[in-house]
Amino acid sequence: MNRRNFLKNSLMTIGTITTFAGLMIKPKRLYAAWPKASFDITGLSDSINSVYGHNNLNESSEVMLKAPDIAENGAIVPLNVKTKLKNVESIMIFVENNPQPLSSGYNLSSKSVPIVGTRIKMGNTSKVIAAVKSNGKIYTASKEVKVTIGGCGG
Image (tube, rainbow, N blue to C red; front, side, top):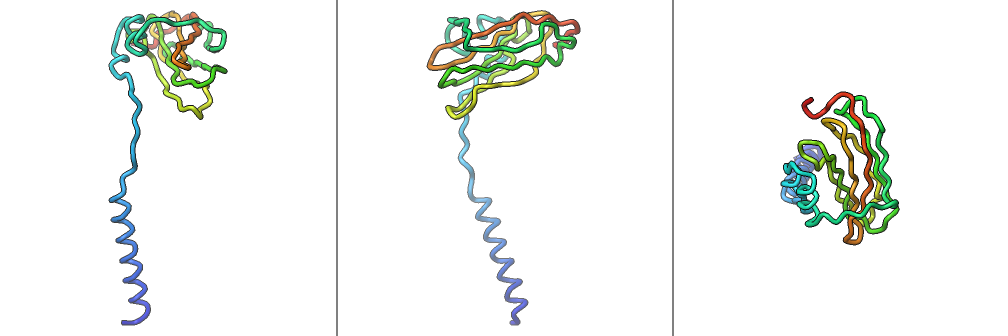
């Protein structure tokens, strides 16, 4: 056996072992409890209750919701939510008059900066509510957004 064949066979063996070892290792996946059923609920108070277990929302100046006064197209309404509260666990966005009021939700880790920027769909003019869960309490900010062209099937 010459040196070239030895190196070729050795590299192929190492490559095969590495490939199989990589396939055998499975990363540990962590999934947070996600309120999938809450996205299908059609009433605002029922939707809030399904996410938090109660409807005790506290309007707070600590939560800042930036949304347009008038959305020209309800299919893409830009929103920004931020807060200076500590230990933020989640940020949820509700749209009062949408067919499913829970528009989007974000679970945050303790090392996350509590700022969310997104685009949502709105069927018609409605109040948008940003709910921030921090230290077991729910703090909210809301704003009325007027929609000129519907985005949720209208």
